[in-house]
Length: 279
Image (cartoon, rainbow, N blue to C red):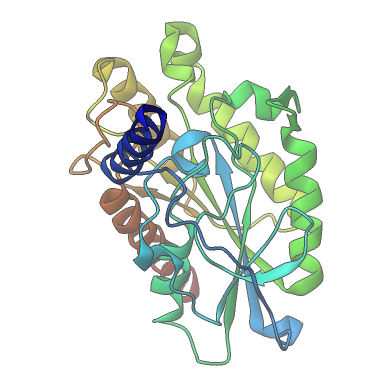
C-alpha cells in the first residue's frame, strides 16, 4: 500500500515538473509538409542563412512560428524540399531553436508577386568564427564553407540565388586582434559567397550584434567593422539591432526580436533591390 502511494506521488510530481518547466522542443512541428507542386524554377527566389548561433536559432519556438505559408520553402536534413516551419536549422539538434528565416520569408512575399515563392537554405552553425568559414574548417561536425557551397547548389537547382543573410561576430569579439581584422575578413567572405553562387552582384545583408552583451564594447567594435565594410559595397545592407532584447543569457536574441529581425532583413533586401533597379 505504501509503495502504491509513493508511486502515485512520484507520478504526480513528475507531471507537475513537466508543466512548470517548458521543453525547448515542446512547440516543434511534429510533421514535415511536403511541397505538393514544386514551383517553376524562374519563380523561386533562393536565400542563404549563414553565420553562428544567432542565425542558427536559439529562440523559443512558439505556435505562431510553425504556421506555414506555401510560398515559403526550405530543405530538411536530407536536402528534400519542404514547406518552411521553425526551426529551420538542423545541424545542432540539441540546441537549435527559433531563427529569423520564416519571419524573413513571410515578410518578403508580402512585397512580391503572388507567383513568386521564397526558398530559404539554412547553413549557420553556433559558435563559428569568421575564419572558420574563410578557411572551410570543420566546426561542430560541419565543414562550413563546403556545406554552404553544397546547399547553394541544391538551392540553385530549384530557383535563382537572390541573396545571403549573415548574422555573426560574437566569437570574433572575444579577441581584439580578430575584432580589428573583421572588416577585411568580411570583405573576403562576401567575395567568396558571390564567387560560389556565380553572381558578383549578389546582395549580402549583415545583422548587427545585439547591444545587451556583457562584452558590449567589443560587440560594438564588430558592428563598427560591419558598417565600415558595408559603406564600401552598395550591394550590402545592415540590420540594426540596438533595440532588440536577449532571451536572458546576454548572448542570444529572444523570440520576438528574431521575428522583428527577420522582417528587417526582408526590408533591407527590398531597399537594395529598389536602389539597384534605379541605377
